Image (tube, rainbow, N blue to C red; front, side, top):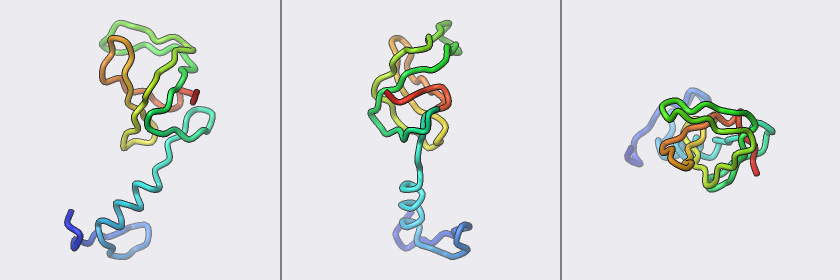
Length: 98
């Protein structure tokens, strides 16, 4: 959106510049693991439960370390890679920050 575009902010009930609304939404996004720790891009996490990976015929075991995670738009999901599995998306309720 251009800087002169305005959008209706339902939280405040006002018309605000689109760039201001987008910045506020990005700053308010906190991704937390199962223990309540804040996650950031590049963190390493450990699985707290065995997880079957759909489409890969593989099970990730509890205690598996996943390195270099990436945050998504959804605060309940993280994007990551693991040996032989590209495009792996994990729910934050199954990981703990390392």
